Length: 519
DNA sequence: CGCTTTTGACCAGCGC
DNA sequence: GCGCTGGTCAAAAGCG
Image (tube, rainbow, N blue to C red; front, side, top):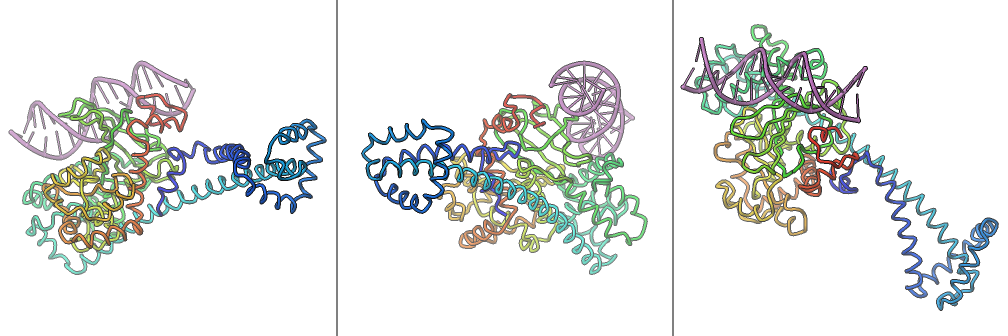
C-alpha cells in the first residue's frame, strides 16, 4: 500500500496529464540518439553483439531493407557514405552496418511500443491502486465504526444502566471516551443529564460539549434530503429523537454516530504556500468567508463538489503570525471516488482522522494496541511536530504541519517537553538515507492537549529500542503512515512554490483566487 | 445560460 | 438578555 513510489512517478502525478504515455516515447527518442552515439564510442563490444544479433535477424532486416529502398533510396546511400569514413564501420562490412542501423531503428520502434504499452499498464495499475486505496479507506472507516460499535455494545452489556450514573461521577476519567463518543452518550442521556455532565466536567469537556452542541446544529442543518442520502445524516438529531425511545436501534445509532464522529474529526494541514489554497486535487466550491477573530486574514469555507452531497468541507485561512503559511482544515470524508491527485490528501486526512478517532475512542491500552495507531506509535517517539492533536479545538483536530524545515526538526525536539527522546529512532536513520525531513517529524502532544490518553501513553512507554522496531514495522505495515507520508512527500516535492505547478497540471498556472480549487 | 464567487444576513452557542 | 463569534445560507454579481 505504499503509494508514494507511484506518486513520484511523474510530476505531481496528475492523472489528467497523460505524461507517462507521452514521456516514455520521448525518452525512447533520446535513447535512440544516445544509442547511436554510444555505439560509435563503445568500440566493438556493442558492434560485435549487434552483429551477432544481426545475423540472427538478417531475414527481417532484409525485408525491411527492401521496404526502405522502395520508399527512400537516399537513406541507404547516405548511411553508407557516412559510415565509409568511420573507422569503426570497417569492423563489419557496409551491408552489415546498414542493416544494423535499420534493425536498430526497428528495435527502437518496437521498444517505443513496448514502453507505450508499459506506460499504459502503469496507468492502469495506478488506477487500480487508486481504486484499491479508496476501497481501503472506506473499509477502514467502516472498521472503525464497527469496532466502536462492538466496544459500545460490550460496554453497555457489561455496565448496564448503572453505568449511566457512574458517568456523572467519573468526571475527567471519562474525558477521552466522552470526547469521541459524540453520539451515543447523547442518545443515552437526556439533555438535563448532559447539562449535568457538562457542568461537572473539566474545561476541556466543557468545550467538547459545546462543540457537540455546535456540531449538532451543524448537522441538523445538513439534514437535507441530499445530505441524508450520502450517509452524513444527522446522528445527533437521530439521537435526540431516540433519546426517549428504547435502545433497539443501537446499531443504527452507532453507525450514524461513527459517521458523525468522522464528520466532526478535523484534519488541519499547515503548509507554506503563496497560492490562495492548497491544490489537493479535489473540486471545491466556496460557500462563505468570514473574518475570524484574531486574524486579519479572512477564513474561507469550501465544500467538495466532486459529487453531489459530498459532506467534505474545508476551511482555508492564512496564519496570522506568518502569512505564508496556509492552514487548511478538512472535515468529513468523501463519499465518492477520488482521482489519484486527490487521493493523497484525502487518504492522509482520512487516515489521520481514523487514527485520531480510533486512538481517542479506545481506552489507553486499546489505543496503543489499535493498528491504526501505529502511525502515532511510530511518530510519537520521534522528534518535532509533524502532527499535533488538539483537544482544545472545537472539534477533535489533528494538525499536520508541513512547514517545518530540517533545521527546525531538532530544535523543536528540544523545545517540546514531551519529546525529550534521544535521536535514535528509525526515522533518524531514514533521514540519513536521504528521505525528506518529513520522516523525522513526529506526532506530539502539548501538555494541554494530553487529554487523548489513548495516544498519550505510547509516548512514555516506548523506549528507544522499541522505537526503532516499531518505526520499522509501522513503515512497512501501516497504510495510514504511507498515505500520510505520500501526501507529505508530495507536498514537499511540490514545494511551497509549487502550487503553480500543481495547477499547471490542469493547465492553469496562474495565481488565482478561488478558481485554483477548480482544477 | 449555468456555474461559481462574493457578501451581507441569519442562526445558534456561549460568556458576561 | 445582549453581544460576540463561528458557521452557513442565499441573493446578487461575475465569469466563461
